[in-house]
Length: 232
Image (cartoon, rainbow, N blue to C red; front, side, top):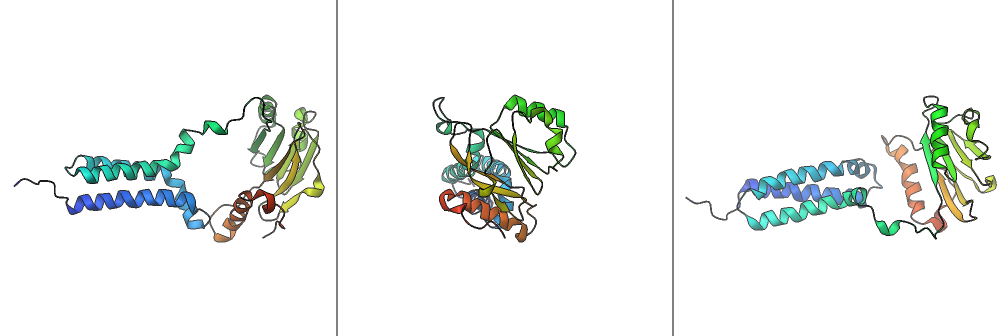
């Protein structure tokens, strides 16, 4: 007998899998403040690939409506990846606008080559440099570029090098995050920006996840979020 346009249990199961993966991909983009959601958010490319693979199998079937619905679900699963592969050009600054450049690097204690790092910094010529896992000795190791960055601040393995003065009276330490918040940092053009430097702990426990969650919440409300006492 001809199979017709009936949908088998296997096809419905495949579609349910596509729908579940697509919803999971979108959900982890919006509810990443819980540690389990955040850990699941690192597999968006895999979610999209899995949904696409199952969709191809459904497309070979005879149920057009189910195939179209699957394509829509796969498209939703791809949405979280768009920002990585297709940046928003409207966010680019025009030559007339003020620009501030920041270079950040993890020197892994003493594992990085000071000469190579100094060369990279000189070539990029940023307004400020933030180094993670850096001991105070790195201030001497980067002596070749210190004339360009005469101002510095060091706390708990995080170093800030700047072309402009640093108002340490405004610095708010991040106790567990090994970093600091500078609510008002002045650029070479005299513009004030908020600067956050944090070396977060590995996300393997809820306790170590909390600092990043609090920091993310503050970034969403910069006018008031950086005025709180930064300890947890």
